[in-house]
Amino acid sequence: MGARHLISMDDLSDTDIVAVAQTGARMARGEHDHPLAGRVVGVYFARTSTRTRTAFSSGALRLGARLIAYGPGDLQLNTGETTEDTGRVLSGMLDVLVARTAADQAEMRGWAGQDRMSVVNAMSAQEHPTQALADLTTLYRHFGRLHDLHLLYVGEGNNTATALALAMTRLPGTTLELRTPPGYGLPADLAARAHAQAARTGAVIVERHDMEQLPKDVDAIYTTRWQTTGTSKPDPDWRTVFAPFQVTADLWRHSPHAVFLHDLPAHRGEEVSADVLDGPASLAFFQAENKMYSAMAVLDWCRSIAPGEDETA
Image (cartoon, rainbow, N blue to C red; front, side):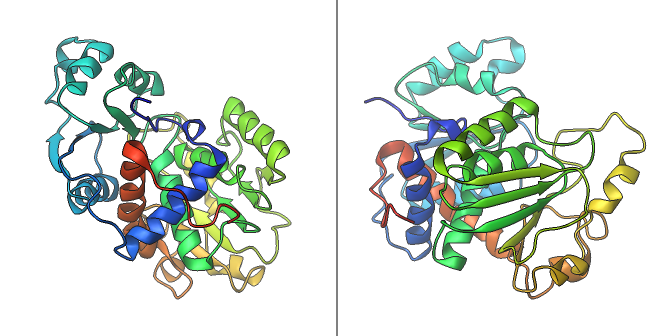
C-alpha cells in the first residue's frame, strides 16, 4: 500500500493512536524481534534536539535499522533543491526519513510526495505529533489505560499543546483543559479541529486564558518551556503575561494525586518550580525515556505496525 507518513496527528486513525501507545509500552518491555533489520533510517534535524533526535536514532538502531544522520547544512535544500526532488531522491535510498524543522508542515508533505519512503514529523511549526505519542505512551504505562483521563495543560498553546489536543480529543472519555496566556492560545484552526474531534468521540476539551477556578482531581498537570525551540515572541513584556501560568506546588491543592508532565528541556523557576519538576509527582524524565519507546513504535507503524493489545483502551 506504499509508505505511511506521520506528519500530522490526522495521519493516524483513532485505532492507530491507541496502538502506537500500546506498542511503545511493549517496546519498553523489550518485546520486539528487530522488525527494521535491513532498513535504513535517515534523521534530519534542522533544529536543536536532545531527546527526539536521540530517541529516534537509538530506537532505530535497537529495532535493527542502520542510520544516516543529517545536520542543518548537509542537504541540497540549502542550495535551492525543491522538497519534492529531495524526497524523490532520498526515497530511492532510505526507508524512513525523520525530520525536525521550524517550518510549515507543507515542507514535509513535499518530501512525502512519493510512496517509497515514510516521512515522520519530529517537530514542525504547527505540530509536534511524536511528542504527543510519547505523552500517550507515558500515560498508558503509568495509568494502564488511555480512556477516562483528565489532563490540565498550563502554558503556551504551542506545537506541543496542539499535538496533545489533537491526540487527546481522539480518545473517548478523556478531558483536556488548557489554561493558556491571553494571546498565546491554540491556533484557531487547530483548536476547531480538536473541538470537532471531541464532538465525534465524546472527549472534552476546554481552553481558558486565566488561572481561576481550576479543575479538581485531574490525573496529570502538563507544561512546556515558555520559549520553545526556534521561536520568539514579538511582545517584549511576554514574561509578565506568562507569569501567572507558572506551575507550582500550589496546583496540587486541587489535585493531590496528579502526576506532572513536561516535554523538556525545562527552565526551573520559569514555567515550573524546581520542587515540582524534581518532586515525587514528576514523570518528566520517565516521559523523556518514553520518547525512545514511542519512537520505536512510530517506526514500526511506518513500516507495518502490529495490531494494538487492546483496542478499547
